[in-house]
Amino acid sequence: MTYGRNFTNFHTDCPEQSPLTISELLTFPAVLAGNPQVFAQESRLERRIQWAHVLETVDASSHLRGHELVLTTGIAWGTGINFRMFVAELLERHCPGLVLELGNAVPQVPADLLTACHELGLPLIAMHEPVAFVEITEAVHQHLFSWQTRRLEAGGEVTDHFTELMQVGTPADSVLDHCARMLGSTVVLEDSGYNVVHYCSPGDLPKGFFEDWQDHSAAQHRRGNPERYAVPVVVRGKQFGTLLCPAEAEHPAGVNHVLTMAASALGTDLLYRPGPLLWKLGTANRLLDRLLNHREPDMERLHTEFESVGFATRGRYLRGFAVQVATTADPQEALTELNDLWRAGGMVLGGSAPGAPQVLFGLYSSEERAHPQTLGDRCDPPLYVGSVATDLPKATVSLAQALAGHELELPGTGKVRQAADDPLALLVHELRHEPAIQRLPQQHLEPLLTLNPTRRDDYIRVLESYLTHPTNRSKAAEHSHLSRSVFYQRLGDLEKLLQLDLGSSATLTILSLALHVYRHSRSTRPRQPVT
Image (cartoon, rainbow, N blue to C red; front, side, top):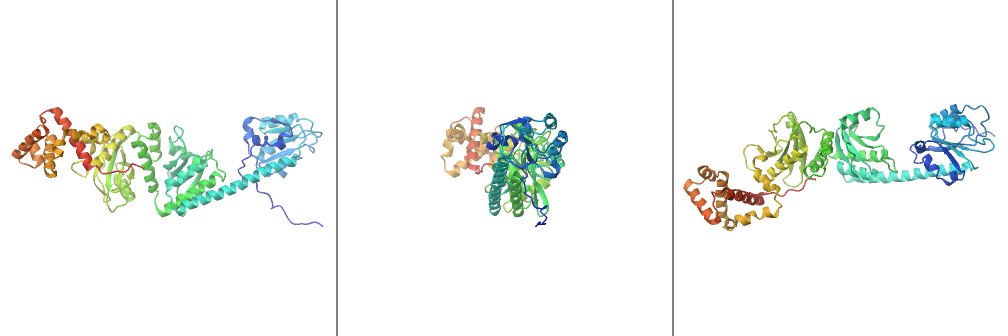
């Protein structure tokens, strides 16, 4: 009886990305038993095997689906075979290699076959001892099935891991960190304009990794990303960016699966906190931290990283800035407002320092030497700006000046204040952790500091006014809001109290420094480190 059911749609699914290469196959006991002789360039042995198939004819197109390792004894070859056409057909089916068992049917490798394999680049393995092909196919298929099982298990673990991250609301930068550690590879998140929004790397990046990133990435996208993995981050049909990693990345569950689950977690973060600028805030904090705390010794690399996020540094004027966020305002909204207000004159890369009150800080880049003049409603004046810089090392100084100016609440007029106008205060701030600097007030102002608070503050105001205008006592008296006679009398009392000559330039220098240290110790607000 003939059973007429059509089985053409029933077949075994081969793994699309096999872990098994020709070189690994040559280590299998079932293959070694045949005393194999390999005819192939070493690079060809890294071709991947997705299945194994015994083929005794030369009709490859009718029997192969693609990527199968072909095993044959040549028993049905006969004479007059066009081996070049046979090898070409095998390569059209992406055959990774041909295993030929030498014996009665084919006692030695045909010269034409060897020539065709060499010229067309198909690995040829000649078996000089008889082998059971069933043992080779069984070993290959068992290896592939075991790998697929491990892949499914690993895929479930990846899914569970990122699902848990979504459930607890893990922020975008942490999601990328989990993804990079899982793949053991650099992971980059870019926006739709090919600007780097954030990246994580388990090790040091190659030199020039971010060089001309936008142009390079755009070209890669146009070519279909052949040299890297790329998974879009899509929320409600809108693509916010792309998650990328090098082609060398590996994971038992498949790199695409890991990136896809990470992209889903990033999308979930966007649903809770809409707006890709939140990624920008985290990216800015990371870059500004590396700049301010000297975490990247290679300034050229740091230049490319800044420019990879769309912040121009080369050939621009850079200024550090720091400003307090209004009590009722959100730092992200405040940063967005500053971006909108300052966009006409330049560009902003800003971050936020945690704690209360919250502080926005960062760099302002423009083609002119001018600094921002407006603040909007979400920031409380004054805005402190550092000195003009033309490269990142100088921008580090400018940013430190702005942060110090805000921390010290340096006096001045207007909504925008130049922190660099008080270099002595900035010097004291920079050296504040030095024991010798910390001891200055006790060494030179001790008789003054032991007075009761009212008298102490009164005399300190007189001293401060005199140090502000040491060559003009009339103006110093005016600055102290005291009459000249009272001011002169208290100035004389100060000389006796401190036992110092206030007309000496050396004395004025050390008293100015001691008074700045004293003021600094009383006015400094605790500020958490940049994170």
